[in-house]
Length: 406
Image (cartoon, rainbow, N blue to C red; front, top):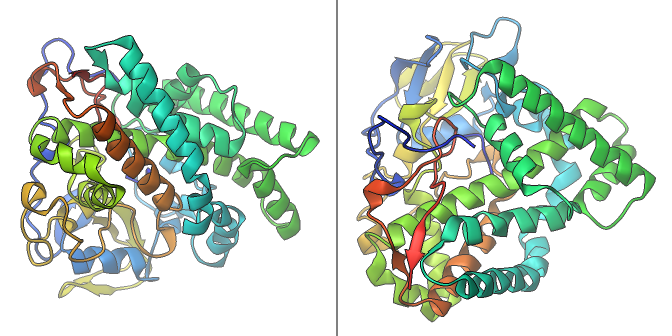
C-alpha cells in the first residue's frame, strides 16, 4: 500500500514497454552520483544492506527534503510532495501521526478482515466467469478488489470509482499531467477528504476514518491539514499498490510463470510464498520513467557502503536493485517463486516509514492469486504481451487492461 515509490498506455507512436518483471535494474554497487529529472544531484544507493541503512538511519530523513534550503525534487508536484503528509514528517511527530492509524493495520487486525476479503474475491471471480471468455481481468478483478477493500475499511461504500481513479492518477503523476491539472485534481481530492471528515465527526462509525478522528481528538495536536492528508493518502495507498502488484503479477504468471499456476491453486501457503517473491522481484514502478528510488536527505555526513555522503545531500534508495542484489538473493522468479525469502524484501520500505498497509496488501494478493488460480486453472493471456496497454507517466506502472481467456 505504500506509494512512496488515467495516464494511458502505449498510444500512437510510442514503443512497447517491457513487462515489469523484465525490467533491468541498476547493478548493485557502492553509492554513486546521478541527477533527478530536476537536475538536482542525487546519491544512488543500490545494495541491499546500504538501502536498508538509508531507510532506517535517523541521520537521513524525509522532512529535510522539504526544508527551506532543499533543492527541487520533482518537475511537477504530486501527493508525495505535501510537507504536511505523514510520509514527509520524521521523529516524534511522525510517530504520533502514525499511531492514529497503525492499529487498523496490524497482522491481527488484518486477519479479522480475511473472511470478508475472501468473499469479495469469490464474488468478483463469479462475475468474471459470468461475463464469459475473453474478459478484461483488470477491469473485472485487479482494480475493483482493492477499491472495495479500502472503501469498506474507510466507510466509503458510495465512493465513485471513476473519480477515485482520476484523483489517484493525478496524485501519482510524474509526466502524465500538467502541474495545473494535478493542482486542480488535488484541490478536489482534498475537498473530498474534508467532506468525509466532516461527515464522520457528525456521525461516527466503526470505520478507519472515525477511529482516526477519535485518536486525533485524544492527541490534540494533529492539524486539520494533516488529517485531510491522512485520509486522502490512505485512499490512494490503500488500493493503488495492490492493484499495481496484482496486475503485474498476472502478467508474469500468465506469460513467463504459467507452469506455477497449478501450484498457486493448490494451497494458500504456496500462494503466500509466491506473493512474497513477486512483491520482491516485480517493482511497482519504472525508475527510468520517474525518480530512481525512495528519497531521503542527510542531516549530517553519513558513511554508506564505504562512501561518505555529505550533509544536505539527497539520497535515493533503489529498492528494486536491492531486492535483486545477487549477494543476498540468488536465482530468479522461475526457480525461487515458492521459496522463502533469503532476507527481508524492501518493497514496503523499512524503518520508521515502513508501509502501514503491508499486511493488508499481502493478504489481498495471496487470496486473489490463490482463489483465481483455483477457480480458473486454464487462465491465460488472450493477446501478446507486446500489445499490453500500460498506465504511463505515473509513479507506478501496471496494465490499463489485460484480456484473458480460459
